[in-house]
Amino acid sequence: MSGRLIYVVNCSLDGYIEDADGGFGWSEPDEELHQFFNDLLRPIGSFLYGRRLYESMAVWETDPSLAAESPVMADFAAVWQDADKIVYSTTLEEPITERTRIERVFDPDAVRGVKAAAATDLLIGNATLTAHAFRAGLVDEIHLVVAPVAVGGGKPRSRVVFGSTSSSSRCAASRAPAWWPCAIGYGARRERRHERRSGRGPRRS
Image (cartoon, rainbow, N blue to C red; front, side, top):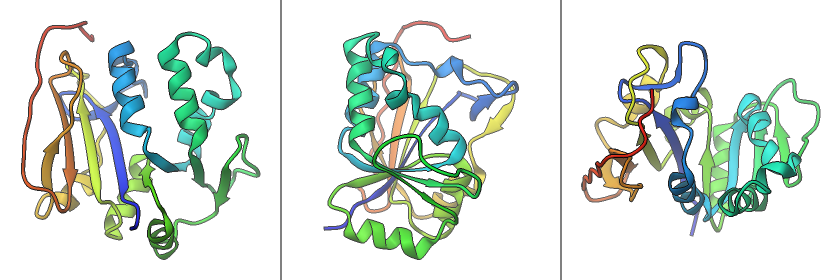
């Protein structure tokens, strides 16, 4: 059995993954949502990252103070550290975390080989990297988590990514915390289902 390649992304109601200043604090999770992500990522055996995202996520191994803040953050740190990391970068000289290797180019055939040999699912991060994976037909599933806020501009979720799935993907809902209005997973071979969970919760503005 081969692993699936999964893309998980937060976005605003108006379709942005970063605001005009490059920030995404409006999507910062509370404890309930953090646990949702912990459980979503727990089965993942490998993360595929670009350099920027890798360096931002590496703090879950290099900064022990994060895990010390709460049990849910300690759980996330453990989940992240337990997975292998493949970092695509032409400039990163060496990894700063364990279980990490650097690849200089994104080779679709090599990724297919990794998927075929994997006993667990893989997660790909970074919209640009994911767009390459979609063009190569590598991504099997997307989890799109929509935050209840409009940011008015910034970095949009990749049209290449979502445009590539419009004709063939089917929708299966994920169970998100009640104050998140929509958490959707797209899978190439799933029956079409759609679930919206809405409710009152902390305002993001």
